[in-house]
Amino acid sequence: MSWVLTLLGIVLLIVLHELGHFTVAKAVGMRVERFSLFFPPTLFKVRRGETEYGIGAIPAGGYVKITGMNPEELKDLPPEVAARAYYNQPPWKRIAVILAGPGVNILIAFLLFWAVLFSGSLHGAVALGNLDPAVQTVAAASSVGAVEKGKPAYGQLRAGDRIVAVDGVAVGSVAATMQRISSHRCAGALTDGCRGATPVTVTVKRSGRDLSVVLFPRYSRAAGHMIIGFVFAIAAKPFGVFAAAGAALGEMWHVTTQTLTGFGRALTESKVRHQVSSIIGITQVGHQTVAAGAGYALVFLGFLSLILAVINLFPFLPLDGGHVLWSVAEKVRGKRISLLAMYRFSSVGIVLLLFLVINGVSNDISRLAG
Image (tube, rainbow, N blue to C red):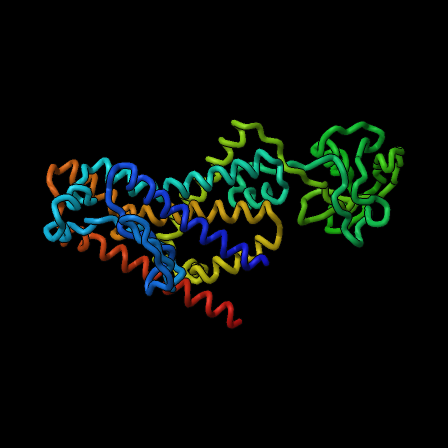
């Protein structure tokens, strides 16, 4: 079932992206010839009015065919059709239509990130925290989350115990608890695993009763202080409406900048290039996150939606960013840019993108083959 949900989620992102183009194109009066999910050859099609709706055989995207997106088409169009053609519209209309697709994906990412943070989903908060550690999405509680086997607290503390005092001093925060425990010292030099010279008394509330446990802490070189061997339970950090919005925007900015720098590094560093994934690997990761829980799944879809928007805004035809670039150039220049010039500029970028796509497919096949 998780595979089905993953594929449906990816398909939904594509449909909504294309629906953005389609809706705005219709709204500004352009003639839409075709709305297709996936690329040809066409498996199914049906015509409604002037628009043909179809499903292709290659699940690598989708497209909206607007009359006159190639300037060379204009001379062969009847006058009533040419008047509604893409390249006969003012630049602002063309830019609005093109930006509508990635704009929908950006909005989806924002809404999903915001909903996860505002709802208090722990799984979602952890996933967002992994995306950008600079945004604090989880907070430690003053209760015991897990006890490490073989450590002083093992068999003495239990998951769910709420720590209320250390060495008879009330503690109201995680920091205060750790400070009291780490203040103990070994009898001699601090060596990894050395036993504390004095015990630490931890008072916990368990099943409504206060219980004191006496433990000898040990020094951990990895942690850099004395420990008794437990971790605190974590909870999603509470976010209000506006705080969740700000954190969601912060996450989106981090993902965007990491994607852009990652693209450049993938072209120059073989180590980064080996980590690139295609739709095959993305689908496999999606299956794993969907299986892990709803919070993880929503963050994955938001992340994927944002990546789809960022890549589509690269300034190379036939990507959305290429159409925006040349519409702006035409507005600034005051006359149309030749199709040859547009594709000469775009060819280098498209070749590089195809290189990364092929590299990603190769990486995913290698991973699947073990």
